[in-house]
Image (cartoon, rainbow, N blue to C red; front, side, top):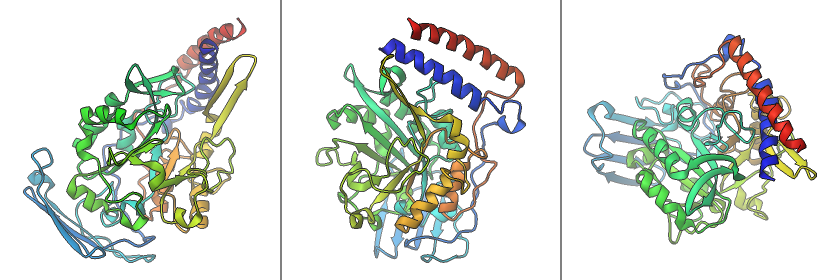
Length: 434
């Protein structure tokens, strides 16, 4: 069965990615280099309530005053968290709900925007890379084209992956490790931690799918060994209302800049930092195969609307194709790359990313907190998913800031890829008929 499944994936890899993702190889706009400049800030009108935040960072200490929480706290960074003189700055953000306001006066950018420093974590829309580690070339089970470091460099602030338990190790595999194996969770988190070390003003979200329903204690070793645990935020309550989340400035000052969710079997009594996803957020229907992309609550099932209105929520915006052939023993769900440019488009066309964001905003009175997408860098222009999120956040997106290095800069590259696809496809078809 696995042999036939692999063969089918090879066919999908050639017929779809090579014909769709490599289709623009002759177009100069398809050749990129990694963007080194930060996403600039822009004018904005806020949505929702958030506090005025005033804080000062120094190399020795940090203090923060929240006018809405009427509290002041001081923290002294550890040696690993201390700030150099180059990063000494003042973070100041002010805004009023639902109205345009003057540009903040702070010099630091939180998640790429000065406007975000005073916003609560729960008052921002983040692009989430669906199955972030799954970027294996010529593998139809892949969900991304670029590695996690490039994803983060380009502005993705949420990374998600399904996980499995093999040989007493948490690994990153898609459905099964025979179909796609992206290595261990620990190796992946080491890379993410290294990125956080050098990006002091960034807050990210990590969503892990516990596909084998293992004991959550099995996640402590890879998280601890990677070193990323030092950055992980622990909420004061479970569950937590939308207004209970801290601002990005607070998270940056405390250096607790990672929110880590586990889908299924989390136990916060034993592991308080590994958050039970369904206590804190809900999701729209997952693995959609229809462009309607409803904004209804699917998980957790049966949740009351009143509860949903007071929780974070994730919009599943990744279109899939179901390959189901009983005779061949194939049952695979893979990204619909034929429609990827429209699916990820920042337009109001049917099935587009902006369309879903607008629809969910209309139905729930606020944009989704997380926009889960495949191949985040593709769309009607490079980075259009990030642009859709920026519009939801009422900030200005720099269209030149995305996307990372692409290996399709000439006609010869396309020709080579086509020949490789033909050879793989031919071999795969031979396997299928045996």
